[in-house]
Every structure is written in structure tokens, then in C-alpha cells.
Image (cartoon, rainbow, N blue to C red; front, side, top):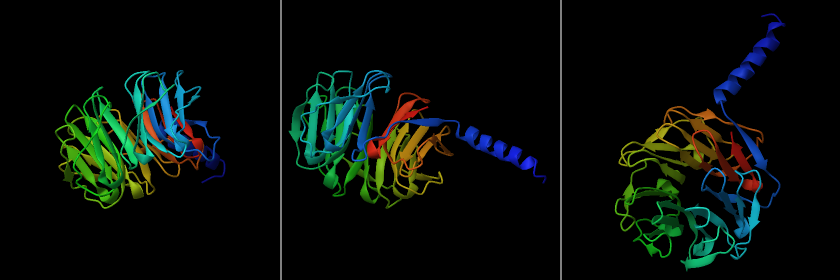
Length: 309
């Protein structure tokens, strides 16, 4: 090979890698080394919310270009882990110390709903009435009145639960330590264990319909089910680090974020995964929320906020 061809081939190789990735994410915020964001939710393309350490909250009304700090009134020792809004005014947050708070004015003021005395890690709603929250020691809470009141389900595990996803008024799945997967088909009143086929910690779960769902976790674990969780199959992405968040837009298009700048995208239901390019190579992402198949946001350690594309 002549030396004159090497630079050309190198450029072509780089272009091939960039084209295979297809997407590039932009780091919007990375200024607070003491702050981590753990929860992210968008009501629409303009209005979104961030929650994290120190009971901190932020809101955007311009699609993420600018974020305004919200004064929650929640004790600063509380780490907020989950957030959900029904519209621009009404929403809830959950977190440590069994924290459950609601707002009716877009986050300007917050009211405590109930305190369950144990850490809550995640929440999910289907519609405005049916919702779930999960956390420490296998705790599962359910509500059928939009979060005004919560009932604790009988525990099927003592392991920490870290993620929850629901479909319709009856179906939900929760994941956690030791490869734990719980499933309800009666709106949260009773739960059954499903066989995940792994002992790895599962950190998040996402279902797009009553059959198709994905769970992700430690050591690059990605699981997929096409039968509502009766069977779970391992998918390969090449990732070996912690995978913290998963979000599927439909059966084909999905995204995963995690430790060490992991940002993955699939367009074939997880059979193959492509890396999304990040500017910061040391990014640690905790959560992801997609507006559609091409645009969304992710948040994480050191106050980082990432926009896609």
C-alpha cells in the first residue's frame, strides 16, 4: 500500500464509523460535579422536568434550551429518583425516605402525599389514574386515583426494586437485584415472580405493549421478552458496563444509556445495537426519555444533561 493512500483510507474509515452510528448526542449541561440527576420526564416537546440529589428539581418550557430551578420544599437530604407528569401542571415525584409528593401548579409548590419510610426508586403511570412505585426491600405501591392515595402490595421478594413499567390498566413489571422481575396482571394488587435467567442486577425496564419489553442492568445485561415476560432472552450489544436506563419508542426503535459514555440505539428490536456519539467520553448517564424515535434527553452524574440528536 502506498503512503499516499493511507490518509484517504483513514478518512473513509472514520466516515464509515460515523455513518454507522447515525446519531450524535449533544452535552447541554455539565457544570455541577456534586450534583447528579436521576429522573427525567417530558410532557411534550417543550415542557420537561429533572429531579436528583438534594431534592433538586428543574423545569424547561423551551424544549431543553433553558432550565429553571424549582423550589420543592422537600428536605434537602432527600435524593429524588423518579418523576411523572400528566400535563404541564399536575405531576408527582418519589425518592428516598419513602418520599411521595405531588404538584398542581407545574412544580411551583409541592404537597406530601404519604411517607412509607423506605426508599422509592422509580414510578410509572398508565393514563391519569393507574400508577406504580417501587423501592427498598421489594416494596411495591399502587394507586388507582392518580396518586392521591397509595396501597402497598403483598411483597413477593425482599430484594431492592429499581425500575417499573406498565401497559394499560392491568399490566406492570418491576425489576431489581438478583435478576428479579415481578409482574402484575390485576393493576398491582398481586404480583408474581418471572424467571429472568440472570442473577445480574436489573436497573430499568420498558414495555411497549402487553408482549414486548426490555430490561437492562449490570455487566451490560439486556433482556427481551416477546410474550409478556413468560420467557426472557439475552440480547448482545458489546457493552460490558452498567446499563442504567432503557426507553423503547416502539417494537423496533429503542435506546439504552449507562456508565462510561454508553448510549446505544437499535432499530430492529434489539437484535443489533449501534453506539450514539457523545462529546464527553467520561459521561455517566442514569435516565433517558425519548420524545419520538429521533429526539430525546438523557441525564446523569455531575449534573450532566444530554440532548439527542
